[in-house]
Structures are given as structure tokens and as C-alpha cells.
Length: 115
Length: 116
Image 1 (cartoon, rainbow over the protein chains, first blue to last red):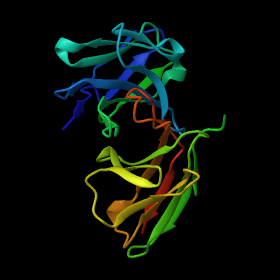
Image 2 (image 1 turned 135 degrees about the vertical axis):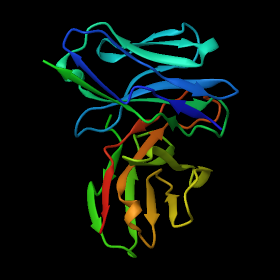
Image 3 (image 1 turned 90 degrees about the horizontal axis):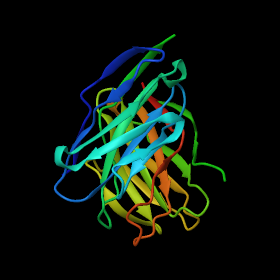
């Protein structure tokens, strides 16, 4: 079975600070990796995804994530956060196996950006 | 292209009642999945439907059921509601081609269910 760990539950940053949110997963096979964001009062939106190829993927709003296979990690980064980045961030994985597309989510990281 | 829509957005029920939630996927998407989001348990997978058949199921009791119609719209039903069923229920759709191992799920706004 898959599992996803997000070790930072609540992060508070000032505007312009750099962000790195940790995500580690556990699964024996090949996975697809995702970061979703949930802004206050809004639905889950896809931030970025990794399927294969370049382990550094870029997403919307200046976010990027790096897949490090040896560490089973897919950390999310942004060089300079804005107040509008205040949201909850979820890392998710699914197995790249036909019929097993259910997403397994981490517990989420609540990011609060102070102006 | 319109996104995933869910109705109703908010629902209040009492213990013992049953409830039906509805989800309309993105046009062209044939797979619909349901997730439960609670503060304590986070986001948990309920089940997935494709071509009117349940293809995958999470670890939820039989009180939770669903179905999918020929137009890919899906409904989720919870019978004999319990206080612990209070949650945000999210629907997600994807294209669903079996040969595409990389298609992405897109989420709707959710239905907030409160059980009193």
C-alpha cells in the first residue's frame, strides 16, 4: 500500500521568503506524483505533477518540485512567496498501474504568509 | 471547458438518515472518483467509477455506495448517517483511458455534509 508523509503541518512565512515543503512517499513500484493546493474557500487545484523525465517540474504560480527517487521525496519549492499563497498544500501519489489510480494524499501543510 | 460540478454544495442531515450527492465530470472524462476530507483523517479515497462500473474501492463501510450513469455523471449515497460522516465530499474526474497511466484527476468544489 502507498503512504505519503508531509512533515510540516503548519508553516508561517513572511512575504518574499523562500518556501520548501517536504513530501515523502512509500511505495514499491513506479508512481505519479502531484501537488494540489486548496485556497481558503476554494476547491483543490492541481499545482504541478511528475510522471517521468526531468525530475525538476515547474507548475503554476512559480512553484516547482523536485523528484528524488533515491529519497522517495517530492518536495515543493517557491523562491519568494506572496500573501496570496496562503493555502493548504497536499502532496499525492498514485501507482502507475492500470486500475490503481486512486490518489493517496498526505495530511497537508497549512501555509500562512504574513504581509 | 466547464470544471467538475457537485450538487448540493451544502447539506445538513440528522443521524440515521440517508443522503445522495451528485457529481458531473468534465466533458469527455469517463472516470469519476470520490474522496472524503475531514480534519482528522485528511483526504481519503472512497471509490472510482468508469463506464458505469466500480473499478476501485477504498476502506469505507458498505453504508457508502455509488453509481455512475451512461453520461458519466455519478452519485454517491451514504445510508444510516453517523456523526462521523460529517465531512467535505470531493468528486474528481479524469479522462480514464486504461492505456494512459498518467492522466490527471481534477477536483470539484465538494459537498459539505453536516450530520447532526
